[in-house]
Image (spheres, rainbow, N blue to C red):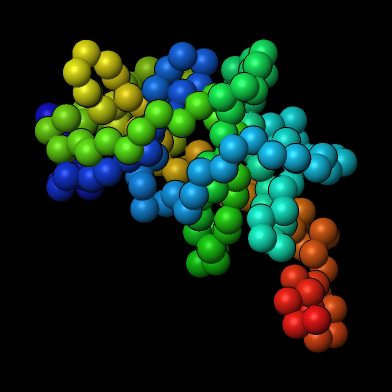
Length: 179
């Protein structure tokens, strides 16, 4: 039994959160960064770590453990920030996701992916695209665009606007590049 919409072989970036393996479609991933200085932003939701400077651009960083209701990581020794692109209201948003560790890029055939489990109406599983199977392990495949609600991503975009407001000649980042 395969998942509707997954009809061909796809590649996924796998990562760990609290000893579980998760994956996201490699086409949404821009790059993987070692943990770096994260600047805290006041009045952000708990799962928002803050922002990083990525080659002159302000990129919000979300702690995926906190977003999923897990405890904050005791150690960040192997932690990484996965930079992804999400489309919100027909506009591309760049976002960093803090994960415990990045594993590997894997290839899964559509037959290796089952639909997400039906757990009942109280738990939200709409962000799970499917359950991949590799060797004897299950891999939770995320529907990246559904992990965050439109309201949460609007907060992320607002953060970017506050920290990099437009100036008469364009955005601050554009002005810095023109100097």
